[in-house]
Length: 78
Image (cartoon, rainbow, N blue to C red; front, side):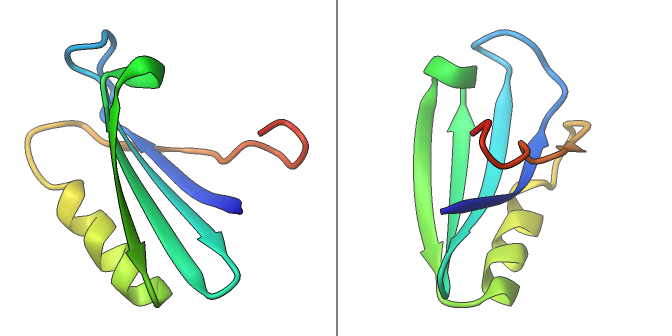
C-alpha cells in the first residue's frame, strides 16, 4: 500500500488533532480519518476510483480547521 497524501488540521494534542490519509493499493483507494493523533481512533473508507476518494477528502476537509497538506514519507521510512 502506498501513501499518497496526508492532511493535518494544524492542532496539537490528542483532543484536538485530526489527520486524513489517502492511500492506494492496486486499483483500490483507501481513506483514513483519524482523531487524536497516533494513539487516536480511526475510521476507514474504501473507494474504487481516485476521483471518488478525492471527493471524500474534500468533504472531510471543510470546516473551521486550518487544514494543511503534509508530504508523504519517502519510500522505506513508512
